[in-house]
Amino acid sequence: MDVATEADPVPNLVYVVQTHDGGQRVYPADDILHIRGLSSDGLMGLSPIAVHRDAVGLEQAEREFAGRFFGNNGRPGGVLKVAGRLSNDAAVRLKQSWESAHRGLDNAHRVAVLEEGIEWQSMGMPLQDAQFVEQRRFSIEEIARIFRVPLHLMGDLQRATYSNIEHQSIEFVVHTIRPWCVRLEQSFNSLLYPSERQGLYIEHSVDALLRGDIKSRYDAYAVGRQWGWLSVNEIRSFENLNGVGTDGDSLIQPLNFGTMGATPTDVVASTPAQPSAGARAIIREVSTRMLEDGEAWDIEERAIEVPEWMRTNVRRGLAWYEDGLAGEGVTAQTVREARQLSAGSCSDAKV
Image 1: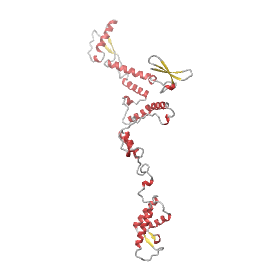
Image 2: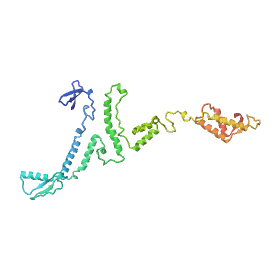
Image 3: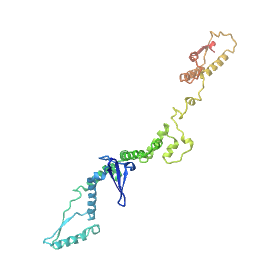
Image 4: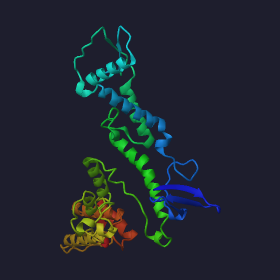
């Protein structure tokens, strides 16, 4: 089936399709999905083979030459020299006799018998002088350039190393495959109705082509899991493993952030709501024990020395206050009294 583009009198682009029975059918451009490559007129894409026919033709000629050369036992052509003059028929018979006896791999390394002063003189050019091997490699590079294919994918590993072959594969996906994927995606998405474009789209997944080695994958999974944007089940699905249930769908954050979705009150749930009030209750109890001797005290004037363990508790309460964990109901006066207690003394009236 042959397809050609033409412009009708309107003018609109139409496609003329020649069927197998020799007939023709004309289709409007809206009925044909035409994904063009590089184009010079915007109608038809250019054939890479046609544009680079010289490079492709050179490679074919080299391949044919190699086939003929090694089909002749790797021996170049030559001349049979005869002392006398031969007729045309005699020359043809001598040539045919020589080729039938010595040409081809099946006749390789046979002994030749030359009679009546006949001599053999080689006339071929050695392959080393023609740089045959280098030219063959250059042809491979030329074909690779046409289609933007890395040389290691064509079997030429001369410049491939352990450190760069992975990046060459990535470049092949990004610079060779991906542009064609974009052309296909845009063409297919343009065929969707406006109502379908709200929830449908066509996109190629090239993740399998970019799949790294097992260490690189596991390192990436660890980062995603640690920072809370990958779950256990998602990681297992990437490795074609079954999930572990609903518990594997949870996301986490580092400990200094807490579990995903948690509030600050959840993180400090074990912290006392009002540590300063508890510290004051302890101070009252201890002060009461110190006054059990029944003496008459001047509450407004008598000072009480605060024990060291009590100071420690008060300092802890002040630290909670500085960190914003003391809860509600703490006044500036309460803070001043706590600081006096932490200094080592307090009047009876404040107990």
